[in-house]
Image (cartoon, rainbow over all chains, first blue to last red; front, top):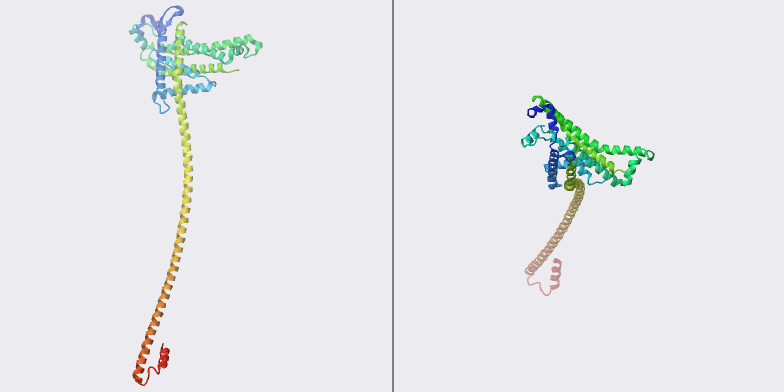
Length: 258
Length: 157
């Protein structure tokens, strides 16, 4: 359908159109409205669902909603307990939020690539990119927040001096201080960048393949998009899981004394 | 594909979501989970305890039953013994009573025999006297032969 609508712009035009966000503003002060809107709606959905479960939470026989919420809680809690041995009121809820939110972002990928933009174009919105995790801003926003928490906890637990010592004197002792510092800085900075780019790269590529499949003749589309969608169910869950687990691991590293 | 202010917006949303989860979602759900865990553990422990108590009670009940059985058999034995004693006793009493009755009857019979003898002797004496009176008639003076008569009468008695 959309193939015909954008026929004038050609295949490249169709792809670019699909990957261009709905934006306002110029330069740095550009806002990707679709990313903000969809991630907020999905975040709201997440909060609403779990809040409903939390309000009705009993220690007796749980309902379906509570059962599911508890399953998620149990799952996240197991992950946290496996790799994090300190005491923290933040990490487990943080991990739950990351897992659910990222999963829901990624899940948007499974909607047919043209359906939401089509609805958008009917309502007069020309550009719509529905998967927030194909926006670097979304993935970096999350990974930078995690990075801030890593720095915050490193300083809080080890003290400013302890953290500085770790940066300067490890892993090769005080005689190789500049080298240590360089290594450690790269290591720290690589954390948020790898977190954000891994998620972004996987989902961007996945979305691109869905778009490419949508360009094929209609009789070929199901044959390709069905297995790819099934494979994608694995990918989106895995990416959400990886983001969550790495966050837990990084934060537990920030909590540990060496 | 550029980094821009969307990043800040997303960070704010993220921070809000994490704060909300931390404040309102995680604690109640986690607490209810922990509470249920505790409930189940308590229930299991109670079941275990109940099981042990049942075993204990069974053991106790067996002991009580055994004791009761012993007691009852003792009572039965005692009762039997008592009954035997009673029978023996009553047998003795009956025997004694019978002998006593027999003796009394014998004595009475003896007495009646004596009485009858006495009566008979009296009658015989009177008959002999009257016969002797009729035979002797006037010959025998009652006053003169008083000592003979009484001698004869004594011999008869």
